[in-house]
Length: 369
Ligand code: PLP
Image (cartoon, rainbow, N blue to C red; front, top):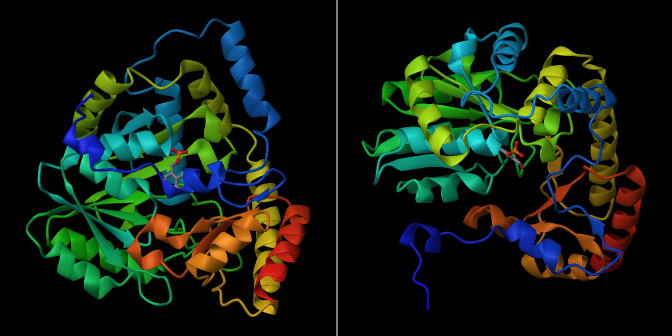
């Protein structure tokens, strides 16, 4: 029998995929964090053009210069962050940026702090990098507990915190005050904050998005074209950081990936510099779906907070109810897939049509009535 490396044996396959694999045919899929919109035409055309023009070879390890410059401009004008093109590493999605950042910064035995429940990758990447995942429970309102975080920062073994707002799986968006307090308190203890901003464009009502990097230079900004432009399969993201961090991270990328796909980089260049109207269209539709879903769940007596961003609802549902809902033909993800503190919840993605959401609500009603 093949003996595998302990770092890979120590992690498990994501519980999200498992639910998907066990679903009955004809199920409504509210399980995946994948926009159901198609990539906008202008972006697809840019990829076709790149192929026609033969832009199909390796690029610089850090990505094409035009895209790095475009991302730096985006960060300046939209996020109030001062980066130059050389401070940007183009990666294979937000996942590639998380990988490069965590592998660059985390030494064996150092802790990576993140919220629990939280996005599945943070803990597993920490483990793969030889670090120690250190999940910190969210408050009962599913927002960050700044006091608890401070305690974890004060542990001299803590190297990195991953901050994720708008958050997966809760849909919570942190206030400016909370983000400022987290960044400043991390700085007090020499902790680097990786700010995962992949859902930045999807904040609803008067909820405001703010980039953590505006509150200190101990922040690495991570984002992706994936959710913003419905480009999950193109695999383009980025990290923005001080030059010394980028110099290390590019080595990780060079030896794991060489470079992100050239064609997808030209498509992303069009995404970040071309017509931005598709974002508003998607946001408006997500917001309508959110209202439909939350209204429907509450009407059945299911307790659920109003998500302020991303495209997930995180209602209180016990594990056996989750299983019954999946058996009734609606794929949702048990909260336990996002950490121990997610037990008693489930994540429902509303990146699916209003028609599908109505059918899903009807099916759920048969389970909980
Ligand atoms: N960060 C969060 C919070 C996510 O939810 C996801 C994907 O679901 C990612 C990062 C990874 O995104 P990408 O597809 O760009 O790798």
